[in-house]
Length: 514
Image (tube, rainbow, N blue to C red; front, side):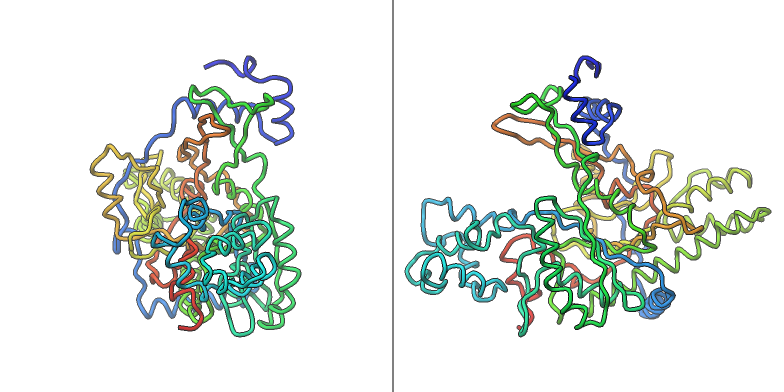
């Protein structure tokens, strides 16, 4: 591979310095384009009794009580919501309708959209936009066969501009007295299960171009929600750091350059947010996607299970902290070490090969390393055919086996056994996490230290008609949390209601009244 000295120009180096990216990072990225990333070695799909906990009614009550006590103790809790994603993919079918050579809804998605148009929370705003721009409302336009005018007013810049806005700012749910965006639904959720002593901390990661729109919405709606729920909200925003951007490459693995000769950098994917997560001054953090929200009538089941997994986290974490303090004291008996090993293998579902063969000093060091790390409890749902990743037991570089969330890109499709494991998995990852990011002494974990750098992946894109390779960082809930202690808990499918297409908003789960 050509040396960086022969590749980087003085203007390249200035570009790197401005972004906060080192030449060492660029060298590593070029190497990764050359070699690619290894597939993970799997021990099996996680299942009930094999890495996934099915909580009993008695345990549920205990976990909820533990969480309530933790909140009352005044710990700092944050709800962390990745919200930078644009909604354009939600409207893929409707963009295609605008470009189609027919004017009347023909495909199923198009028909469904117009059949249910009065049931969208944004109908009133869309009707107003049509009146302003077309001189007629939605119904009149439909009666006259002007379907595309309706869609243009939904997606276009002179209308609602939903084709360019982030999901978090779209009108999702209609109530008698108000219409809520996903951002507002997340504030309500925070009040219900992530508040402590009448304070709630909610952090959204957003794109630079939309940050002012988010801030403007919060400024407008916050007094109403604080009064309605008796909660003082602390709302904050952050953006993916320029230092987490990754360099694009040509198909021959040389740096891809823009027409002006500068290096092309692209956002590193949601795995970059591990740094934003690590910047929080919090004890416990809930992580949930922006579009997985429901109207109020559906919130009780979500609230209950969020409390369950949070209670399990703090209970398990306290036991870990006790073990670490005992190790600090020294003179730990062999029986105590065996108890800790049993806990790691049976509660944390992490298998440590040959641990029984170690002497007490070596075993103590091994146990400390496995216990003193960030912890997360992940809600997983029964597989209902949704695309995406799932819970597995996977081998780590040190030979241990631990629970991991894997995406399909990490699976070797040429290995029939692994393909069977992935396609036959009983559970799915809905991105329903609660994380403990402080150690037993109260210090913040340096979260980037617990990323497995070998879990990134390369995708193929194009720019201005030129093919390129893009480098994705290890994903936030898979490779970026690879070296965390992980517990999987089965949660009801009703807690998972993402909005991937606009027509998902017509599902009964997203209607406040049936």
